[in-house]
Structure formats: structure tokens, C-alpha cells
Image 1 (tube, rainbow, N blue to C red):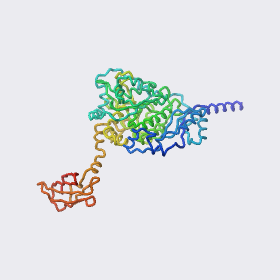
Image 2: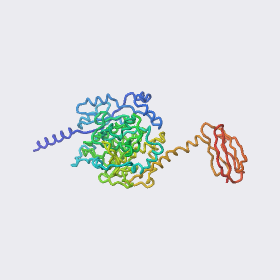
Image 3: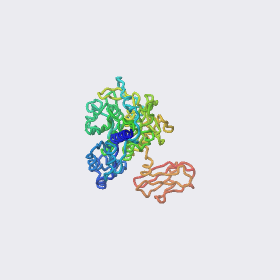
Image 4: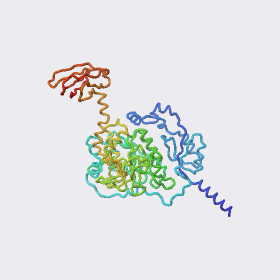
Length: 539
């Protein structure tokens, strides 16, 4: 009997050690880092370099590709399959047995292994993961007349941006999703195709250009940004340019999809993408030992959250769906928990919280979702070009992403964090956020006005003279614009009579008005062709 138990124990050990696992394998270094940074066109497109220069985004070692020699050595290791790579994390996503993966640590260039199974001895639960697209694929079949997308656009006042000729022209948006069937033949995307605004496609799961993928989820989300059918449907950024990246393999649920997603972000960054829409979320997997707990969703732990934060740091603006777990897991899934991402929940056509929409806060107490858009009965265009409806945060996210791109078009020199904060502050619950609604529904007319004013005071002070305090009791001070060191100040009373003239400079920048009578005066300040006039109130 004792010998039998030993045999059974040995077999259990053998089974456990032979079970296939997934992991991130981190590398120690990269090749030619200094030379690549000194000559960034060798690793980035000119569009990417221009965007980074515009926003003051540093080009650093994260932009340098992973060492392909290291990847080749892993691929040649028996029992190891490489599925994805990340230059930002200097890592690859692999699959193999626990022992085979751990043996990679013996390689001089491997510094760390991170298993997706957080506890390899944890007994898997009996139930499998939910189909995260099941709810959203229950589409309505109503045939809409002109304005099918009117409600979801006007709810955000995105139509106001369009009236300002801000339709996404010149902005580049990447859509990361599960599949985009018929994208080149769908009439909703005919103008994008004919005008050359579909800049590229790639399937990171199958390693091919074709992005038909599995399912039509991507075609639906793409339509809410770029779709256009005359008199029937208009997306929120109909004049933008696009990359379509398939990162989701719908038949299974595995953390490798997070790794593919990060890889797509890196590709997007290298191509100069401005805005990324992601209508995907990850929390439970086919292997429950890989599941993310609420404690994992702190904005910087999961593969997706880490990738999102790198993307944010690199200057892109990421928009993602909060998830449809309001009646299940409850909380926003990753990458929606990431610090550097704008997470969007769903409301109905009247602006009321949709019960399926995942809620916050994150485990570390941050407000999530950030903002809301229509996600219940949202208008979409199907893969066959028919206007229909669908429900889910997957649709509130692209509706928001298109509006964000149009807003950024107005002030492209603003940083991604500035644009995100402007959007948050325009929302109706900004001063009283809730777990269900976050900061609420943005108003892009208000956001547009705030964007125009952002930095205006600093710009004015750099380009124009200014006076302070006003009203004044005794000393009236003058602020000089850049590149001007001296000027003449003249003061006139209400009769137009000159009562004071003084040469001023940056070091002698005031006049004493203490002996003047109370009342209104006009001050002029001139230096060559530059000058300003001010109404002065003397107390």
C-alpha cells in the first residue's frame, strides 16, 4: 500500500510539472540602444517622431526593439512557443511546461519569469469564463432613417465639434478588437477606403495582414468612430485615418491576448497613432488560475495595465470600455483599470446608467469609469453595411474615442493627459463622481472651449503687455512680453488729455499713481510695433 501511494504521488507530480503554462519572460538588455535613440528614424516612423516632438515625449530605451536573437533562442528551445513580444517591457509571452519555462532562467539574457497562473497549486474552479461578447452580439434589426446615430452623438455634443469642422481630419486612430470582416467592402467605410485613410491592418494572433478575425465585433466598434452612410449614419470621427489591429482570439480566453494587445500598442506608437480605442476587457480566463482578482486591478499589475501606462507615457491617448460585468464581477476589468487610460461606461439613450456597465472604484480608490456615453441600444453598422443597434460598453468607448480625437484636432499640441482631464472636467458629475457613472457624461462643447483657453493666459503674457493690479491704489506694475525689454507708458484722463508719460523697462516696470485723483484712465504701452491699451481704475 505504501509503495502504491508513492507511485500515485509521483504520477501527480509528473502531471503537475508537465501541465502547460503561460508566462512573460523578461530580457536583460537590448542591442544598439544609444545609436537607435540618437537616430530614431531607424526604429520609429517620421509621424511617430513628429508626434513625440510635438508633445515633448521622450524617445528612450523602451522604443528600441526587443533583441531578436534572444527571441530566436527561445523559439529554438524545445517545448517553448513564443506568442508575442513587448519592446516596452523588454519581454516575450511564451507557453510551455512550468519546468521548461523556469529553465529559461539559466539563460544569461533572461532576468525574470512571470507566470500567468499566480498560484500554480491553486485548484481550478469548475465553471468556465463568461463569453464577454455574448451580451453585445444581441443586435437589434431596426432599419433607421436619417440620424440613427444622432442621439449618441448629440448626448456628448460631439456634433458641436463637427460644426467647428473638427471631424478627425489629420488624426490617426487605431482600433484594437477581435475582427473586422468585410471592412474593405462595407459601404460604411467606402470613403475611408477610397480616400486612403485606412493606413494599415494587422492580426497579432494569426500574424497576418488580414483582420477578418473571429466574429464581427471590431466591425461594429469601428463603425461608431469612422462609419459614414449618407442620410443614415455618421460616426464621431468620420474624417480620421485608421489602423485596424486584431488582438483578440474570440474562441478562447487567455492572457496571451493582453500580450498581443500591448504589442499592438507598440506598433501603433511606432506608426504615430494619436488615439487608440479598445473595446476589450480581461478578468476571467479559460484557466481560472489565471483570473485577475479585484486586488490585481490596481492600474499597474496586469500585462494590459502595464502596457497601457507605457502607451500613455509615450504620448498616445487610450480610450477603453469599462466592461459589461455590472451584474457579475461588478468592477471595471483591465485595461480599464490602468492609470493612463480613459475608461468609458455605458448609459441608455436618456443618459441613465445601464445596469450591465462595470463600475468602480479601482482597488486603490481611483474613479473608474472616467466618463460615460451611450452603450445601451447604440447605433452601429453591421459587417454587411446595415444600420442596426447593439448594447455594451464596447460601443460607448468608440463613440467617446472619436469625439476625443476631434477635440484633440482643435489643439493637437496639447498633451494626452491635458485632453483627458479636459474631457473629465466637462462631464456633468465631475464634482460629485459615483461608482456607476464616474465623472458622468462629457459635454464636448464645453471641452472645446476649455481646450481653446488652456494656456491662453500664459500665451497672452508671453506675447502681450499686461498691467496689475487693476483697480490700483498707488503702484501700477507692467508685465513685459518675451523679447521686449523697454517701452513707453502714457496715461490719459477721460477727456483724452495726456497726464503721464514714462519710459519703463523690465527692471523698472512700474509707475506711481498715488497722487492721481480717483477715476478712470486709459494707459497705452508701446515698444516699436508692439503695444496695448488698458482701461485703468484708480481708487
